[in-house]
Image 1 (cartoon, one colour):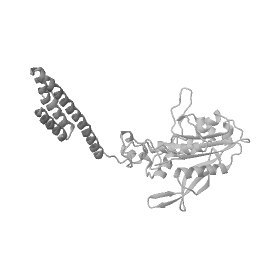
Image 2 (tube, rainbow, N blue to C red; image 1 turned 45 degrees about the horizontal axis):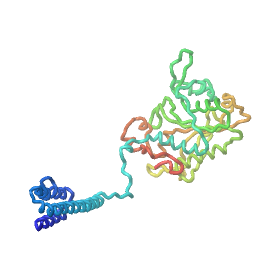
Image 3 (cartoon, rainbow, N blue to C red; image 1 turned 135 degrees about the horizontal axis):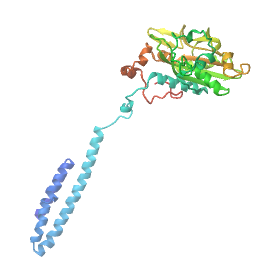
Image 4 (cartoon, rainbow, N blue to C red; image 1 turned 30 degrees about the vertical axis):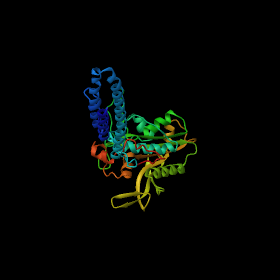
Length: 360
């Protein structure tokens, strides 16, 4: 019995000295394994006399149970110690910015981002988005918009013409998104309030012009529409888009076949070095063209110009993107250079909105 007591003390000390679960497992095997010290003693019970078994049996079983309890308790202690050590070594500062994962590797092209921005702004004013085909008929692209037969825009040096089809018609790559305005006026009755974003095509190529570019036009047709409505709409758009509290704006007389009167719009700005600041300073920057819808255009769309009036405006999406985000060369928009897109592109989840802010 004294040997059992010494063995229990030995095993208890080994259990207490175990510093981790693998070391504790070695103690368990040495004590309770098939060839463990307690297991070997259990095997001797068969060779003992009944009187000896009656005394040693309960003693060995009790020792086995107590060792098992000590092993279990020590295991829980070691688990807690391991967890605490892991928590201390793997602490996370939840106030740090989120690490960008694989889902943030891609970038939204500035044209797509700016299109979403202006759509959010005009949607807040009650405008819907209207779309139309890139390949247009002459009627929608020119005739219905009051272009005379000898207008320079109808010449090949300015417009991409497609081959004459079997029916003798020659279609064009639309030179503006104004055909969408015509299709809208011919398919629905006023009140009409739409913007028409999309690709357009002209024979032009330099630092600020490309053969294919993006344009957005706006159209409002209702009873009683006047220049004051046009001015307010453009002012509110410029303030929201450039994210400034106020913007100076001036209208200069111009000429477009589809509007009368027609105007070019300038906004106040200031140039500080290579930086262009919108909404401050005494300099001016042309940004778009606009005017009141020509009565002939209304008649071509079967609308009564004596009853309805309206205004229209148009601007280059590429151009306003360059102005807002400081991009010097329009041609880079279409080069497909991933380095350029990584620099100027937007994260996929930076969805424009008037509440959270248009741009990050």
